[in-house]
Length: 124
Length: 107
Image (cartoon, rainbow over all chains, first blue to last red; front, top):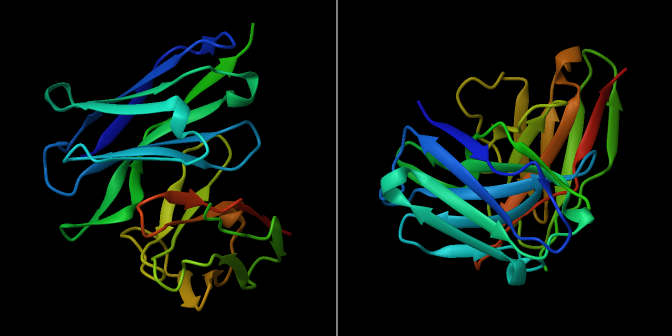
């Protein structure tokens, strides 16, 4: 059974760096094809894809946020960490991590298991 | 940057068919996926690879593709289908994107 859970601060101040951790179970990030992504959703707004890390440490970032994001993995701990620098009130959102879609042993560019999300508020 | 365009809202009566479109230049070459999101919940994948239903998704959900547009069709809409729906795809360089979302209202 695949599960993911996000953790991190609920409140950060403008200009600070946000660090979020995704702790997962039921799969290994050392298995070929596996990936874990981060997605956010401001209150009452649309989903926004942020970043993805693959089993081979390949990484992809949203072009609009690339300069502020870093995604890393700790395979031994079953964790993926996302850092976002220079936080601003517009970054207030629920942040989700999710597992790359696996269908019949093949991996696709979608997300089949999601964490519950964690609300991060940016305010002084 | 790559964009996916959805209508902001769609309204249907119970039992009718709802169609939600998603347009993007790369869709002829890349798969599209659809997610359903209800208030306060994480998204759920309802259609993958343009037209396939993941296990556990009701048969009334279907997907199709034509050129630069993909369509999510919900046949015999039920009250429980009222939700936000998002399309998602990726470009050839591995950059993912979500559409702006469509709010489905069941009248």
